[in-house]
Image (cartoon, rainbow, N blue to C red):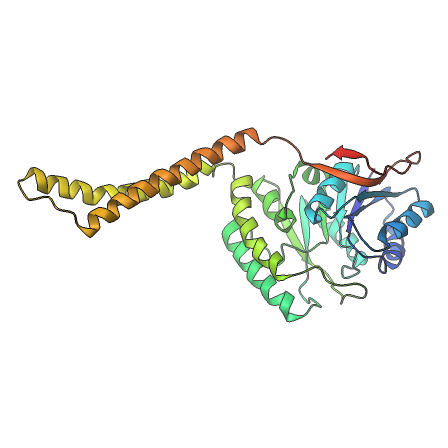
Length: 321
């Protein structure tokens, strides 16, 4: 298989027929063997019914349906595992990404890049989405060291080995370029067209913006092998411990020199710092123990898993990803 196209879907019944028609027009012109993997993330509208219809129209279409909403990261993780292509392309199902940009992404891969991300340089969204996104992209670029303008664009192209090597869960789909870059893959971006939403409602909210920065801290621990939890918390603990011990040593020297010993505010502050440093070091040790034991993969419960011509409806089945 040359190319796998992974499309997460959540309540996008209105856009799916038009999206599939546009994709078919582009993919047939590329001249490669391809497949579609639509991952229904627990949609509560008629999206799954539309996907069943697309499956009936083309055996290139694979449909994976979660029984409940797990999030975009879970959808991508399952899609990546099912993908057989030497190249994997992802895009959202809301018609805001342009399928006509796919050849440009593939061309950039052919030039030696391992992952190429779209950059919505003329983003057709309200300022309530674009302004927080600019802040998020700036902070992520600053912290990660990866200079991209748009980390969270759904339109991306990966070499197959890149997609299958990434561990994505929670809300880490926002940091796919960061995860790939820290693993040593070459990451780049190209400008892509962006359209206004035509059907449905945006899934963006304030909580996603706030969670994004919390997830950035998670990425620092998960992706940077050199930054173990104990290393991070241990450095803070050492600084606090030294700051707390310093005044105690000073007062001890004074006492040994014959000066009277009495309780002072700086002495109490030093004791508090020492206690807090020991607590922070303990957190680091516990985090190390937890990370060493957390090698299990998550379980997702599927409503349907239609990937082969002989597949039947698989309601109620559970499968590891």
